[in-house]
Image (cartoon, rainbow, N blue to C red; front, side):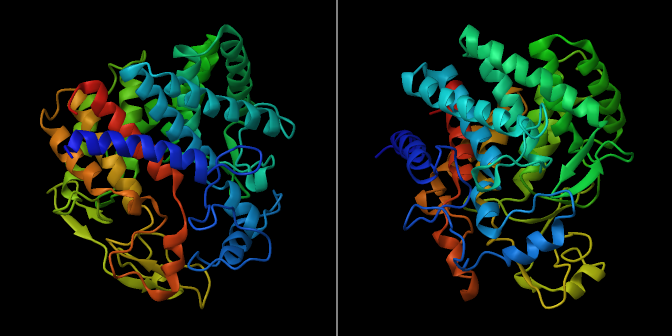
Length: 429
């Protein structure tokens, strides 16, 4: 079978697997369904291979609850993330093909987000929190902000009926005022944090894109002005806030936002397209011979890459200056708890690989690499159905983590389709 036919078959199958496996009670996408039973985790079950969920929750949540149970956490922790990327893939699919199923699926994701806005709005107007347990929640995160809100706004602008656009406009008006009303003090894993406090994280761009999306739909200029005030504080930190920089999904996420900002009134105030080229250079360095992304550190000055070693992290590592300890920030906070770190077994390896392909095609769209689609195709071809599991197992996954291989990762299937439909729109397969 020709590669183009293989990719087309996978696009259809991965779409159907998301709709089938990740569809939980109430219809919203769930984050950690089992491959074998295709059901979410339930109260009282063990979580083989999934970190100590109870300790994670206990160590993260403060009094600004409600604190989810382990099963609730696993049900909705990545719902916004998975829904957003799946929505974006279907918007891109519609642009490329105008297939009825693309609009139908995009509308399903849009309606899910409408439901979550309504659900969370009962806690606070404009809130879009993680639906742990399928219920409203106040918890947000950097990653699950622009994804899905910017894609929700894109649907409203491109595909919505007049009634849908009116609903989205009102939801995003309230969403924009939510940030203003709170003065950017947000609930992050149960902890209140003013995210724009200088020096702000580069990832604040993700929240700023939400407010700018609200401006695009509503025309309320105070949203735009507030966004640009804080974005100008971040521009001097781009493209990389640190050296070395830990390669991760941010390479595509930030590049996508740079593309987003380049098309706004602040487009001439930074080298947004040049930054995309820098992220693509880093992504190419953190890639193995099969086309898969590796986890590790990228030297932003000399362009070299150092993969993470295969090892367990302990609490003691969090006190060290080793790249896999304190600087990386993923070592356990408690004594007696361990975290597995590896360049080839990371739970984001498949996600980063799919994002690598999408980043390459974004770079190609700006004339930064005319041959990027060749590398993107190699990556997408390497990512068979086995790669849609929560952790990658190339034989080095410790026995106690093998259970992770039985967990479906809908966000990986969604981003894979983002890359595929970008390539389809460019006519490269």
